[in-house]
Amino acid sequence: VDFPTLGRPTIPRLKLTGSKSRAQRHGNEHGGQGAPSMLTVSVEEMLTGANVAFNMYPGLAFGAAEALAECATEEQKHKYVEKMINGTWGGTMCLTEPHAGSDVGSATTSAKKNADGTYSIRGTKIYISGGDHDLADNIIHLVLARVEGAPAGTKGLSLFIVPKYRIQADGSRGRPNDVQVASIEHKMGLNGSATCVLNFGEDGQCMGELVGTVENMGISQMFRMMNSARIAVGVQGLSVTASAYYNAVEYAKDRKQGAHYTQWKDPAAPRVSIIQHPDIRRMLLELKATTEGMRALVVKLAMHNDFARQLATVDPDKAAYHKGQVELLTPLVKGYNSEEAYRLCGQAIQVYGGAGYLKDYPVEQYARDSKIFTIYEGTTHIQAMDLVARKLGQAGGTYFQQFLGDVASFVETHSSHPVLGAQVAVLGKAQESLIQAAMSFLGWSQEGKTHRVALVANRFLFLMSQVAVGWLLLDAAVRSVAKLENMPSSHEDYAFYEGKKHSAIWYAKNVVALVEPTIATLIDPDDSAM
Image (cartoon, rainbow, N blue to C red; front, side):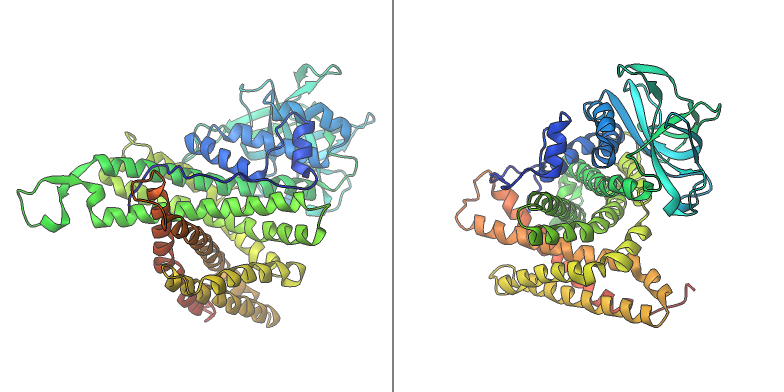
């Protein structure tokens, strides 16, 4: 297998037909391009792979603007969204408080309604990425707070627009809005991204305005941003893993150490590039295959998102299918990509050996940067519980059944493939075993043994992700084998398609093949941890 840093196959043009999507309408209305999600995530991979910390700033501003474009009044959209999209103003999301990490419902930040319709905001938020900087003229904070007299828990939270600087009637920047930086978090990684503790209303002068017109809608409004953010974290995981892989490949091509494995007993044998050593090639192929699988998973979700929006007014039934797959795949994209990023960045360091542990090379930074992906925007376990406790049963289990049906259809179509038939059969067994796991979850829930679901949820998320990735890699491999039939090895695209074939074969044999036996251990409950 050749390891090109980038293949350049001919890509067919994508044309989505029908009415303009909601995203396109918002993008065009507020100065954006209205590009499809598939293009967006592909560009995001490049930007994030170049500098994940810096790309947090525009990423967060876009996410906050998107939430406002969906939930704010027309006046608020006109006032805020375009300037956030074009970079004049930054944006943040402010959920977490010192006493309440993922337990958002216990937030104590308060909002008191004033006579003029504004609200006085008071409280402290922590872990606020991009919480303060001078890259933009203003920063628009979206803050979860509880209006006086509102119900306890998440049902009583409202979402507020709280600018760093007040905005005057003509749209220009006014005086500071009593949003103060209490401290900067000293982090393991992502040190190019300012993560702040923010105090709102310490001097009683912090003014905010309710997003929309109805109080106590904060969680549903914020989750529009949260779901986008979770997908964005999956893109971050992909991006940093891809950068680690590309760097490791280049280093392995250049670094000479040891004799060729066929001459390892000969002390006079010439030193060879370490990419010729079998174990280095094994690690690089795992990096390559998993990176390509992560990318396929992200783009698959983006495709469903595009068609869900595109078909909403044209074919509601098809739109519902695509929307359901977005719901189902979101925890996979976030959970699987983030966990694999941290693990595989460590593997990229291993390719370098001792040099990888030094700051002379970038892979040690990728390892530090990527750890947070498994934590923020909902930890891996939160994603796993969202999957097994909510998404599997959503719409009466329809979304999960449709996913299984898509995989089963692929298996049936390609089970006799002359090159990939054996690997397709492995995928089929893995897909069937997912059903056994889901039935076990149902049984435990009916028996009042829900702790068992929580104990194995993370593993199930990973196993389902591996089935999805194995399917998408094999789908790419089927197409690649067809391309290779009439393509000479001298063609510039040959290595790209040959690499796709081997990525799929490796992943099926070494990862998907373990899904079925792992599920056998998963459904044999172990309560030791309890």
